[in-house]
Image 1: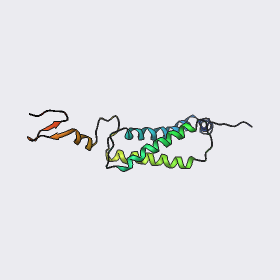
Image 2: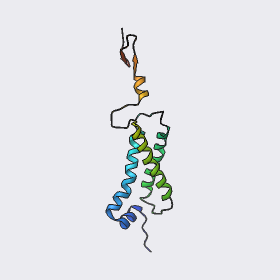
Image 3: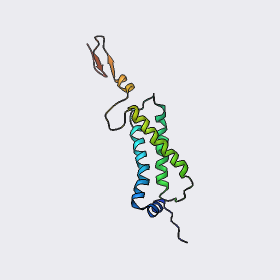
Length: 130
């Protein structure tokens, strides 16, 4: 009996090219969104952002493992993690947190970089004021 051991081939055969792109595109979209916020300066006020790193790692592992393992027993758990990652990136984006590539910094990082002088002028880090 012939078996298909790669899930990529199984999805492509069952759902076609468009289904394959949409199915694995959802996972890659979630991993990309999680990566943008995980690599940005961490905002300590948003504790939920800390869950993006393990969720992203879980989704990457799922995509890699599916190249050699075609069973679907763990799919309900992975779809819950996918939903969690997408919901967290939506919440963080809605709150306006900094993300990799947009050039913004978190408030704490910016406050640590600048300080006020006695005359009220903003002094940059490393600047000598006479």
